Structures are given as structure tokens and as C-alpha cells.
Amino acid sequence: MRAAGSVCFVSPAWGEWSTPVEFGNEEIISSSVWILLVVAVGTLLVAIVTFLFCKRTGCWKAAFPQVPEPKNAFCGLPDNTERRKMFDIPGLICMMWWYMMLFHPLHADIQYAESETQESPIANVKMNWRKMELTWDSSKNFSKYKCTIMDRDIKSIQTEINFPLCRFPVELYLPLHKGVFLTIEVPNTNISKTFTFIPGGMNGSAIENFSCVIYHISLMNCTWQAGKDAPGDTQYFLYWQNSRYDEEMECELYIKDENGRNTGCRFQNVRIETEKAYFLVNGSSKDSLIQFYDEYIVLYKIEILTPPLNVTVNCTGDSAGCIITWQAPLTSHVENIKCFQYEISIQNKDEPKEQKKDPPVRVRNNRYEFQNYNEEKKYILKIRARGKNCLVSSNWGEWSEPIEFGQGKDHFPFMILFLIALGTLSVTLLQYCLFKRYCNFKSIFSPIPQPRDKLNASTDEDIQTEYVNLPKKGCTEEVTMVEDMT
Image (cartoon, rainbow, N blue to C red; front, side):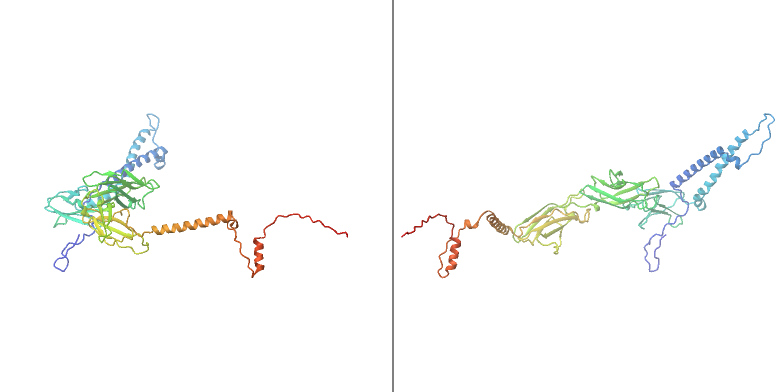
């Protein structure tokens, strides 16, 4: 139920609905019927096996000792055969009846709420989730009905109709894995019908952190993580539907982890439509039933735009500065160039990275004039795009390849002079080392004789002796001594 203000200073608008309470002639869902059928078959099998076991092992004799029969006067043998056959059949019937009595309270508990409460005129409620149509049968002719659909996030839609058919807008896009509440009411009466759609399966077994991204125009990747409480052998499968007019398709190229479990999917040739795409991931395991996960996603919102094309820079050197032009990024569903906003980043290449950079500039057209151009500086240009006021992703796309423009400082003359000086010094040092190792500087540069200094003869003689006193050839002289005898 819900409330609205009346007469007093309270908002007259209807408030939020209370938590749905189930009552009345609730129908048994198909899963309960299958459970009852399985229990019945299992009970019958247990009864037959128990009977055969007792019959073979002889436990009947220990539990029910037989009374000695009188001797048959006609045959002389105990007449036990026919009686034993008659006892076997009633015993089997009694045992089966006993096991069915164990099953009967379970069935009675499920049907108890139906048989005790007043029968509702609303029955055979059906929901077509593809068309978002709710239908039912009514044993009475009512002029008006109210239908309400609500999810776990308290997002609800109510419609009022004159016949037992409610059509909810298909744009509602309610995911079913969280559960959905449906209510049918008859105005001005106490007649209502409420039922809940809650997916089955083990809690915590559904996937987590599901996300998708579209890149390079038509490629899409979807990834997820296994449920925290999912069994080790759980395997997941992804199905998706681009629009309600398309057929559901299973993933063709799964992304697997080290254990071989599917944790993602790659799609090719993805077409972006204006409607939401439907994704469903279910799982299977030998140990338990796995909960499914579903989600509706607007494809253009998850697209990463490609960089702008044909980026060019034309610098004239005058007061006009540089003119930068480009083309819109490629997309599969938008051709209007006015649907994009661009962010232009121009940075000075010679400035250190630690220095504060210039903020980027944002424009809507495909042309920009850079006024602060300096010929002696070198710049780096990058551009990226995002959607604006159209069915294009509002997230910034990829940056274009960096483009350098501007002359910058001319270091070429200084480099030439530096190389010449370095080469000259290297050649000089090399010549010096070669002459010192292989040549005698005295033989190449002979000393010049100096004039004698009369004032300082000793010093001069020493010098002359040192430099002039050259080795002489040795000669032999014969001396004859003559002696006078007189």
C-alpha cells in the first residue's frame, strides 16, 4: 500500500509503495510441481527397494513371526504358499501407503494457504517479459484494473486499464536477476493479486563486476568475475540481444582464466543501435543451480571514440600564428560533425615536465587558431573528442598521435664549433703521443750554437764543452830520442 496527503498540509502526491505482502489464492509455480513429482517418484523407488531387501534377507520373519499352520489333511504339507503370496501383496501396498503418508504433509503444507483463504477472482497470471505484457483471467467483470511493476530499487510504474491486459513500456528495461514485484488491483475493492519473480539458484553464485566496452568502431569486450560462492566447476555462458527485434546470440569467442573458466567475451562487427542491448550470463554446475545475471546497456555510452583524423598544422610566422585543422573521429552510427566536442593540448617541448603545463582548449568546430606561437620554440600537439548533445559517448576518447611543430632554438652552429674544437684537440694530443714514443725531439730540433760569454767564461766553456766537445779520432805518434855523446 501507499499514502497521500488529504486536507492537511501534506503532499497530495502518492508516496512510495510498501513492501509487497503475499496473500490469497497463490498459484503453485512450476518449480514446486517438479519438486513434488521428484519426491513422489523417489518415495515410490525407496518403498520398492525396501520391500525387496526385506523379502530377500528375511527380516519379515523377525519382525512378524509366523503362526504354525495346521496340517493339510488332503496333501500332508503345510498350506503356506498361497497365504505367503497373499501376505506379500498387502504388505507392499501397506508400505507404499506408509511412505505416501510421509509425503502427504509436505503437499498439504504447500496447498494449505490456498485452501484456507478466500478464492481470488484473479487467476492464471502470466507475464511476457519480451513484450512487457501482463495478462490474467478474471471470474468477475470489473470495469477497471490497476497494474504495478516494481523492482528491488523501488522503481515502479503503474497503469490503469479497462480489461485484463497490462502493457508496460518496453523502455523500462528492468533487469530480472534482482527480482520483480507485480501487483494487480481492482479499484475501490479489497481484491488484489501480488506475485514476485525471484530467480532461483544458490546465493552468491552469479557473476560479479560485469562491464563492456566498445573500441575501434565495431569491436566489443565484456568481462566479469565468478561469483564469490560459486562452486569450483561452475562455467558461465554469455548471451546478448542487440535490440528487441534481433535474435539472441551466444558469445563466439570467450576469454578464459587459468582454470579454463569463461570470464569474458570478444565481439566483432558490433552495430550500435539507439535501443538498449540486453546481456544475460547464466551458469552451470554439477553441485548446485547457478543464479543468472542480466543487464541492459546503452551501447553508445560505453564506446571509446577513436582519435580525430588528418590533424594538420600550418604556421605562417606572422601575427596569425598557426592554424590547426582535423576531421571528426569515425563512428558506426553518427555522421554529423556537430555532435562532437574536441580537446586540444599544446605543450612546449623544451619546458621541463615538472613545470606547470598549459590547460587544454575545448572547441566545437574542426579548426583552431594558435595565437601564442613562437618560432624559436617547439610544440607538441594532441587532440581527442567526445560526444556533445547527440547519441555519442560523453567520455573523452583516445588522444591522437603527438605532432611536433615550430622551429625551436637552432643549436646547429654551436654543435659545429664544438665538434671542430673537440677534433682539433684530439688530433693534437694524438700527434704529441706519437712523436714522444717514436721520435727524438733533439734529432729533429738541433740546438743552435751560442757565442762565448767573456764575462762568464767558465759557464761558457762548460756549455761549449757540453755541446761542442765531440769525440776525435785517435792517432799514434812515434818519438825518436837522440842523445849527444860528446
